[in-house]
Image (cartoon, rainbow, N blue to C red):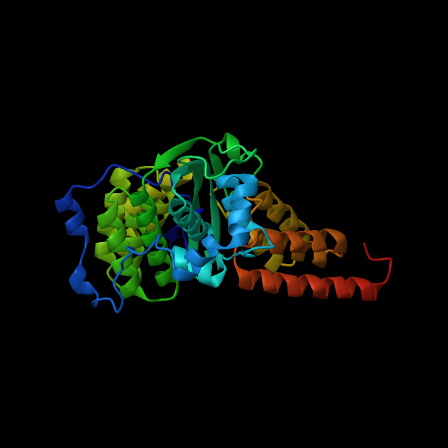
Length: 392
């Protein structure tokens, strides 16, 4: 599962830890400013997050679904029924975070949406559900003028009691959307349902922000913080909302509150440093930038940005080397693979170019990006075919 944390355009760093110590109610209230935003058109409410729709209940009672449970046991039968191509044919799309019912209706969703939908079905079957935060390396991406950092959560299922007499073992099964062979060996920390609800709210705030709907984003971020006052990404999201809404002093106040909870958070420091300069505090901004440089000499996108400079200057060999360095440390970022493919193509290296474009398509978490990469890959294949067998 992926949890979004908003980062301003200049900020290229990860968020260390999801949960921190809760804020005192009075301290949290001082960070909120309801009067600055109009009342939301739709309440920032997650009370129906795990509610099954009538269609979901009918699907659960269907002969095919029940047959999977009999054949494979409760946990494995549920996963098989939900995620095999012959059944729901769910597609992965990180565009928006949805409730269980919305994900089922759309037949697509991001990791958090899929975790929520899986939990809803599992609970309807009387299964035990555990949510876990996974100590995996943060994943970085960017959309328009915002950078996103993703943290990781998975879900474990176990039947409260056997549903059928079956040879399949009904032990606990962990479902993990992390594309890594090492996922099972990573350390985890158990989360409560309230944590998942707060993370959902923070994702919704981030997504509303990406669409420029600052007021709706504020109410979602506010709801996330009230639900879990120790959720660090929600502090960062709230600060970005204030900053994008021309309230820089309020943004600074929230960033400072976040740094009190996690002094080494590069996400927050990278956001706060330019804001301090803009707020007339250049000396403090410089001190913070120096601290960032000491702690994080090569933050995410560091080599990629250098590679883009080289690419624009026509130095494609240097660009290729720099893009490859970024790919090596962030192999699931589609943008890095895409530009590495373009650098290969500029150098006439068509086979590596096709490989990287295929990896860009396969690692993308957005349906629209996968479509775009597929089109570019087909065009490149057509160019290679037209060039004849001498092209490699």
